[in-house]
Picture (cartoon, rainbow, N blue to C red):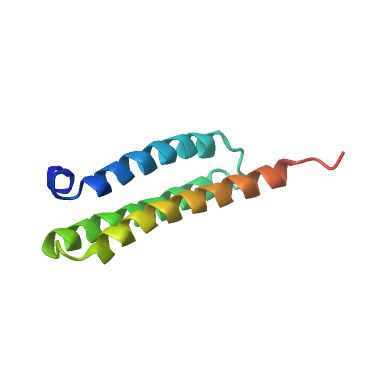
Amino acid sequence: NIYMSAFYPELKEAESYYNAQLAKKYNEIQKLQLGGNGTEKKLIARELSDMNVCVRDMKKDLRNNPEDERIMNAIINMYQLKIELIDMIIERANQSTISIL
């Protein structure tokens, strides 16, 4: 990660921002009352973990192709996608708990 910090300061800055946002959203997910005896939370965690693996792989690609800004943009897009996914999960969970009375 030192490599990324030195050569891609804008990526480091974006990652710091998105990681702070994701930490807040992870806390929100942990507080959700999801059904299925924790099955949904496990599936969510697996999906987010898979996205983390994709980011790790893209960072390897970026080290091998340091001139390719498309890879850096793809990493940032993956962070944005993770936040959108978590927001969607939180919104759906909140909708399902709203009472009509």
